[in-house]
Length: 232
Image (cartoon, rainbow, N blue to C red; front, side):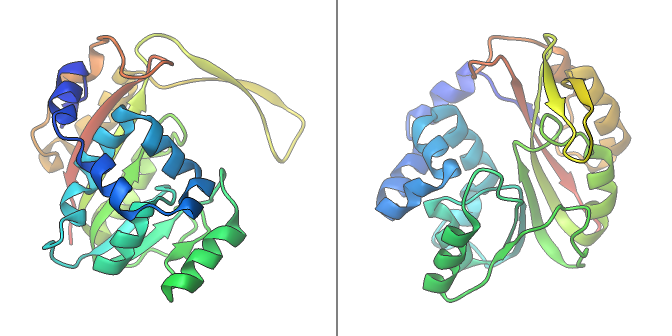
Protein backbone atom coordinates (compact mmCIF):
# COMPACT_ATOMS: atom_id res chain seq x y z
CA UNK A 1 0.00 0.00 0.00
CA UNK A 2 1.58 3.25 -1.10
CA UNK A 3 0.47 6.80 -1.87
CA UNK A 4 2.05 7.99 -5.09
CA UNK A 5 3.94 11.28 -4.99
CA UNK A 6 6.42 13.33 -6.99
CA UNK A 7 9.45 11.55 -5.54
CA UNK A 8 8.16 8.18 -6.75
CA UNK A 9 7.36 9.68 -10.12
CA UNK A 10 10.90 11.04 -10.48
CA UNK A 11 12.26 7.59 -9.64
CA UNK A 12 10.01 5.97 -12.25
CA UNK A 13 10.90 8.57 -14.87
CA UNK A 14 14.54 7.42 -14.80
CA UNK A 15 13.26 4.61 -17.01
CA UNK A 16 9.76 5.04 -18.37
CA UNK A 17 9.12 1.37 -19.10
CA UNK A 18 5.49 1.80 -20.16
CA UNK A 19 6.38 4.48 -22.70
CA UNK A 20 9.06 2.18 -24.13
CA UNK A 21 6.52 -0.62 -24.47
CA UNK A 22 3.96 1.70 -26.05
CA UNK A 23 6.44 2.87 -28.66
CA UNK A 24 7.21 -0.75 -29.50
CA UNK A 25 3.63 -2.05 -29.58
CA UNK A 26 1.49 0.87 -30.73
CA UNK A 27 -0.20 1.16 -34.11
CA UNK A 28 -1.89 4.20 -35.60
CA UNK A 29 -5.32 2.65 -34.90
CA UNK A 30 -4.66 2.53 -31.15
CA UNK A 31 -5.04 6.30 -30.81
CA UNK A 32 -8.78 5.83 -31.40
CA UNK A 33 -8.95 4.69 -27.78
CA UNK A 34 -8.97 7.21 -24.92
CA UNK A 35 -6.90 5.04 -22.58
CA UNK A 36 -4.12 4.82 -25.17
CA UNK A 37 -4.04 8.61 -25.59
CA UNK A 38 -4.07 9.17 -21.82
CA UNK A 39 -1.11 6.84 -21.33
CA UNK A 40 0.88 8.54 -24.05
CA UNK A 41 0.13 11.99 -22.64
CA UNK A 42 0.60 11.39 -18.90
CA UNK A 43 3.77 10.30 -17.14
CA UNK A 44 1.77 9.86 -13.92
CA UNK A 45 -0.70 7.49 -15.58
CA UNK A 46 2.18 5.47 -17.02
CA UNK A 47 3.76 5.15 -13.59
CA UNK A 48 0.48 3.88 -12.14
CA UNK A 49 0.05 1.48 -15.06
CA UNK A 50 3.55 0.12 -14.50
CA UNK A 51 2.85 -0.63 -10.84
CA UNK A 52 -0.40 -2.44 -11.63
CA UNK A 53 0.47 -4.28 -14.86
CA UNK A 54 4.26 -4.21 -15.18
CA UNK A 55 4.98 -7.76 -14.02
CA UNK A 56 2.24 -9.13 -16.29
CA UNK A 57 3.87 -7.49 -19.32
CA UNK A 58 7.30 -9.01 -18.75
CA UNK A 59 8.15 -11.41 -21.62
CA UNK A 60 8.85 -14.24 -19.17
CA UNK A 61 5.71 -13.66 -17.07
CA UNK A 62 3.81 -16.80 -16.11
CA UNK A 63 0.42 -16.97 -17.79
CA UNK A 64 -2.34 -15.93 -15.40
CA UNK A 65 -6.10 -15.58 -15.39
CA UNK A 66 -6.62 -11.81 -15.25
CA UNK A 67 -9.81 -9.77 -14.87
CA UNK A 68 -9.30 -6.09 -15.70
CA UNK A 69 -12.24 -4.04 -14.40
CA UNK A 70 -12.71 -0.73 -16.20
CA UNK A 71 -9.18 -0.86 -17.60
CA UNK A 72 -9.92 0.47 -21.07
CA UNK A 73 -8.01 -0.57 -24.19
CA UNK A 74 -4.42 0.34 -25.07
CA UNK A 75 -1.72 -1.08 -27.32
CA UNK A 76 -0.52 -3.04 -24.29
CA UNK A 77 -3.88 -4.79 -24.00
CA UNK A 78 -2.87 -6.88 -27.00
CA UNK A 79 0.18 -8.09 -25.11
CA UNK A 80 -1.93 -8.94 -22.07
CA UNK A 81 -4.31 -10.90 -24.30
CA UNK A 82 -1.40 -12.74 -25.92
CA UNK A 83 0.34 -13.68 -22.65
CA UNK A 84 -2.60 -14.33 -20.31
CA UNK A 85 -6.15 -15.58 -20.00
CA UNK A 86 -7.25 -11.96 -19.99
CA UNK A 87 -10.74 -10.47 -19.71
CA UNK A 88 -11.48 -6.75 -20.01
CA UNK A 89 -14.69 -5.88 -18.15
CA UNK A 90 -15.56 -2.35 -19.24
CA UNK A 91 -18.64 -0.32 -20.10
CA UNK A 92 -16.43 1.49 -22.63
CA UNK A 93 -17.82 4.95 -21.86
CA UNK A 94 -15.10 6.74 -23.85
CA UNK A 95 -14.72 4.53 -26.91
CA UNK A 96 -16.47 2.82 -29.80
CA UNK A 97 -17.65 -0.73 -29.19
CA UNK A 98 -17.46 -1.45 -32.92
CA UNK A 99 -13.79 -0.49 -33.06
CA UNK A 100 -12.93 -2.74 -30.11
CA UNK A 101 -14.88 -5.61 -31.68
CA UNK A 102 -12.77 -5.18 -34.82
CA UNK A 103 -9.66 -5.47 -32.64
CA UNK A 104 -11.03 -8.73 -31.23
CA UNK A 105 -11.54 -9.97 -34.77
CA UNK A 106 -7.95 -9.18 -35.72
CA UNK A 107 -6.64 -10.91 -32.59
CA UNK A 108 -8.94 -13.87 -33.11
CA UNK A 109 -10.15 -13.79 -29.54
CA UNK A 110 -13.09 -12.25 -27.70
CA UNK A 111 -11.70 -10.78 -24.49
CA UNK A 112 -14.07 -7.83 -23.86
CA UNK A 113 -17.20 -8.03 -21.69
CA UNK A 114 -19.59 -5.06 -21.87
CA UNK A 115 -21.09 -5.19 -18.37
CA UNK A 116 -21.09 -3.56 -14.97
CA UNK A 117 -18.89 -5.57 -12.62
CA UNK A 118 -21.80 -6.06 -10.21
CA UNK A 119 -23.92 -7.69 -12.92
CA UNK A 120 -21.07 -9.74 -14.40
CA UNK A 121 -21.28 -13.44 -13.43
CA UNK A 122 -18.64 -14.03 -10.75
CA UNK A 123 -16.25 -16.80 -11.73
CA UNK A 124 -13.96 -18.51 -9.25
CA UNK A 125 -10.29 -18.82 -10.08
CA UNK A 126 -8.85 -15.45 -11.10
CA UNK A 127 -5.19 -15.03 -10.32
CA UNK A 128 -5.34 -11.24 -10.50
CA UNK A 129 -8.23 -8.75 -10.50
CA UNK A 130 -7.23 -5.19 -11.40
CA UNK A 131 -9.21 -1.95 -11.08
CA UNK A 132 -7.27 1.10 -12.20
CA UNK A 133 -8.63 4.60 -11.52
CA UNK A 134 -12.16 3.32 -10.92
CA UNK A 135 -12.74 3.36 -7.15
CA UNK A 136 -13.99 5.40 -5.42
CA UNK A 137 -14.02 8.53 -7.58
CA UNK A 138 -15.83 6.98 -10.55
CA UNK A 139 -17.49 4.14 -8.66
CA UNK A 140 -18.22 4.51 -4.94
CA UNK A 141 -19.13 0.83 -4.44
CA UNK A 142 -15.64 -0.06 -3.22
CA UNK A 143 -16.72 -2.16 -0.23
CA UNK A 144 -19.26 -4.10 -2.31
CA UNK A 145 -16.62 -4.75 -4.96
CA UNK A 146 -14.17 -6.15 -2.43
CA UNK A 147 -16.78 -8.39 -0.83
CA UNK A 148 -17.76 -9.72 -4.26
CA UNK A 149 -14.34 -10.35 -5.77
CA UNK A 150 -11.96 -11.19 -2.92
CA UNK A 151 -13.49 -14.68 -2.55
CA UNK A 152 -12.87 -15.55 -6.22
CA UNK A 153 -9.27 -14.43 -6.76
CA UNK A 154 -5.77 -14.70 -5.39
CA UNK A 155 -5.08 -10.98 -5.52
CA UNK A 156 -6.79 -7.65 -6.14
CA UNK A 157 -4.74 -4.66 -7.32
CA UNK A 158 -6.28 -1.21 -7.00
CA UNK A 159 -5.34 2.36 -7.75
CA UNK A 160 -7.67 4.39 -5.54
CA UNK A 161 -8.36 8.05 -6.35
CA UNK A 162 -9.70 10.52 -3.79
CA UNK A 163 -9.52 14.19 -2.77
CA UNK A 164 -8.42 15.57 0.59
CA UNK A 165 -9.61 19.00 -0.50
CA UNK A 166 -13.36 19.18 -1.17
CA UNK A 167 -14.40 18.42 -4.74
CA UNK A 168 -17.88 17.69 -6.07
CA UNK A 169 -19.68 17.00 -9.33
CA UNK A 170 -23.03 18.20 -10.66
CA UNK A 171 -24.59 15.10 -12.22
CA UNK A 172 -27.93 14.07 -13.69
CA UNK A 173 -29.57 10.70 -13.26
CA UNK A 174 -29.89 8.72 -16.47
CA UNK A 175 -33.23 7.21 -15.40
CA UNK A 176 -34.90 10.36 -14.01
CA UNK A 177 -34.89 14.17 -14.16
CA UNK A 178 -33.12 14.69 -10.83
CA UNK A 179 -29.85 16.63 -10.61
CA UNK A 180 -27.42 15.76 -7.81
CA UNK A 181 -24.27 17.31 -6.41
CA UNK A 182 -21.99 14.39 -5.53
CA UNK A 183 -19.13 15.02 -3.11
CA UNK A 184 -16.03 13.02 -4.04
CA UNK A 185 -14.59 10.71 -1.41
CA UNK A 186 -11.72 11.86 0.75
CA UNK A 187 -8.94 9.75 2.24
CA UNK A 188 -10.78 9.27 5.52
CA UNK A 189 -13.67 7.56 3.71
CA UNK A 190 -11.26 5.31 1.82
CA UNK A 191 -9.53 4.48 5.09
CA UNK A 192 -12.78 3.44 6.77
CA UNK A 193 -13.41 0.87 4.04
CA UNK A 194 -9.87 -0.47 3.85
CA UNK A 195 -9.43 -0.85 7.60
CA UNK A 196 -11.89 -3.72 7.43
CA UNK A 197 -9.39 -5.58 5.24
CA UNK A 198 -6.21 -4.81 7.20
CA UNK A 199 -5.16 -8.46 7.36
CA UNK A 200 -5.43 -8.78 3.57
CA UNK A 201 -3.51 -5.65 2.59
CA UNK A 202 0.13 -5.73 1.61
CA UNK A 203 2.07 -3.26 3.82
CA UNK A 204 -0.94 -1.33 5.17
CA UNK A 205 -0.38 2.36 5.89
CA UNK A 206 -3.75 4.00 6.50
CA UNK A 207 -2.28 7.28 7.71
CA UNK A 208 -0.97 8.05 4.23
CA UNK A 209 -4.57 8.38 3.06
CA UNK A 210 -5.04 11.45 5.24
CA UNK A 211 -2.07 13.35 3.84
CA UNK A 212 -2.54 15.96 1.12
CA UNK A 213 0.81 16.66 -0.57
CA UNK A 214 1.01 18.34 -3.99
CA UNK A 215 -0.95 16.19 -6.43
CA UNK A 216 0.44 14.52 -9.52
CA UNK A 217 -2.68 15.65 -11.38
CA UNK A 218 -4.12 19.02 -12.32
CA UNK A 219 -7.42 18.36 -10.58
CA UNK A 220 -5.72 17.74 -7.23
CA UNK A 221 -6.60 14.09 -6.75
CA UNK A 222 -4.48 11.76 -4.65
CA UNK A 223 -3.70 8.20 -5.74
CA UNK A 224 -2.99 5.24 -3.49
CA UNK A 225 -1.99 1.78 -4.74
CA UNK A 226 -3.36 -1.13 -2.72
CA UNK A 227 -2.84 -4.88 -3.11
CA UNK A 228 -5.21 -7.21 -1.26
CA UNK A 229 -4.86 -10.95 -0.79
CA UNK A 230 -7.89 -12.90 -1.99
CA UNK A 231 -9.25 -16.31 -1.03
CA UNK A 232 -8.27 -18.07 -4.24
